[in-house]
Image 1 (tube, rainbow, N blue to C red):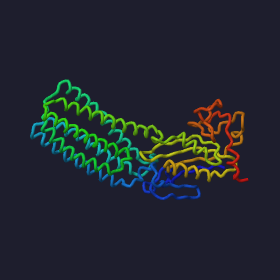
Image 2: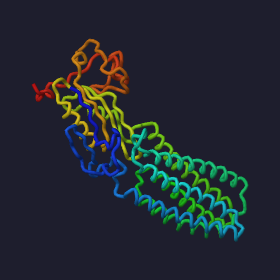
Image 3: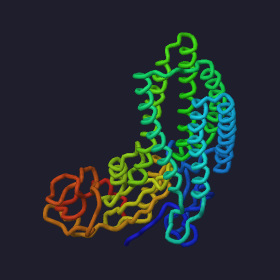
Image 4: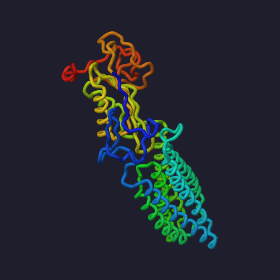
Amino acid sequence: MSETGTGHEPPHDTPHETPHEDLRGPRRGTEQGHGHGRAPGHAHGHGHGHAVSAEADRRLLTGALVLILGFMAAEVVVGVVARSLALVSDAGHMLTDAIAIAFAIVAMRIAARPPQGGFTYGLKRAEIISAQINGITLLLLSVWFVYEGVRRLIEPPEVAGAYVVVTGIAGIVVNLAATWLLSRANRSSLNVEGAFQHILNDLFAFVATTVAGAVVWATGWSRADALAALVVAALMLKAGWGLVRDSGRVFMEAAPAGMSPAEIGRRTAALEHVVEVHDLHIWEVTSGYPAMSAHILVSPGSDCHAVRQAAQRMVHDEYGIAHTTLQVDHAPPDLLAIGGPAEPHCAEAHGPAHTNGRPPEDASGRRGPNGCPGRRRIRFPRPDRLSDRPS
């Protein structure tokens, strides 16, 4: 007997995706054991299941975009009237914030499109692309700030402290409002987080600029402006690297941060009647949307359907993985033989094979990382685990 099941109800003809509304719906069951839901209060799960809807996220980002564009236009006007290159340059910096938010809004609309054609997951990773663009932009800005900061430490220019203080206070007010709006959106989304980090770092920049302007105004020490720029550059570098790293993990199909595939493999292998788990893959479709697939071998006579349901329930309730595709088979007799070499169950298995209470073995029979091909022995489940096995 063999059973393959997925932890969701596939929409239309697409086997690996669910409509946006279904991600927050109650768990449902069918004869094949399809079900999709989210454990209440669990820290993991689909990012779409948050309290703030995608439409509300777009409204919040749009509000922040309007604030940024309005302040940028005012800076350009005042800068031209006052013949201040500093104000016009800062308006250019605000333009990068506006572009970051605009990217996030466009990416959200693209990601909301349903799966079709060859895009079986839809275009959900458009949000990850937006997050990576925002991260790279922050890194480039931090490099420019470091260059300018060092140059101004060596050759400090004349800084109009009064203009800097007034502009900085106005920028703090506008960016506080924009930051508050974005903080109410779903920041578990890397896309929203990228826009938020842009505005937050701009707020830090205005705070540092205001303090530096006050120092220059009061003491005439122009290097304070350069030191403030270096502090802001360090904050931007940290935020930008975090966005690039996290979005890179999604693109590289890595398991979600903080989620251990080895632990999940051991926990699954420890379920009743399970002999081995291999070809275990855990990845994120987009931020907050983990998925899992695995091949599970069970002892002869065991109920494959019940084992699959138990595995789905375990990873859903304890790890927040609601999208699962599990193939469950009875372990062949030669694979259960103790001692001698066994034919590999899978021609090309990927990753370690997790067995009942024992680390995985490599191709030579030693315990190691190589998994399915060439296993020499496999451990039987304990007798007490087979006590209720159907006769």
